[in-house]
Image (cartoon, rainbow, N blue to C red; front, side, top):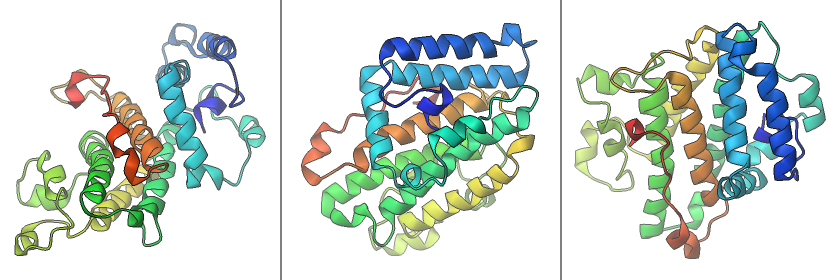
Length: 265
């Protein structure tokens, strides 16, 4: 579901309509009105994030740009009308809430795959520009690696077997286009190799989504798994909104993502 669908809004909704829709959903899903259940807590986080994105003009513009250029959202087999008929906000069914949050990664990863595949937009770039684009894609995947997959119990077993730090995973893929004998001791020889490893483990996470504890605390941090998932999705949308609508002259205006918590920095 898009953020508009979460709040049952058309994509041309104005700020007053967004605020009204949020208040309506917030009244329904506020934890205090639902016995402080984990499902209501999760849904309140989801609708609050949608509200925060759509009422911030810069973030909304990024999000709208992403939706306009997203192959995965364009090719969905259901319309917004049908989504409303099968909306996931069903009291007492927390497993579907888990699935909705985690399944959103499917759309993001499909867009990365389309962008970076053999016939993808990545092939339009070369040299330093290509490396900058790859860094933005790697930023998404490395964040998912560290803050979503590993805490969920789906770590990079190559690193684990070699007792390497998790933070090293991004370093391994920063120079994937460089042909070097040094790569023989690295887990991935190409960006696509890194992507499909992430894709494979994310598929396993999605299969186990109903049993996930979204409110587990991340060791040593002030964030929970659900916070990490929301942050990963917002980071991906930020980067993809520019990458999917990019040409070589645009790189200088590509702003850095601002993390919501210093733990992520």
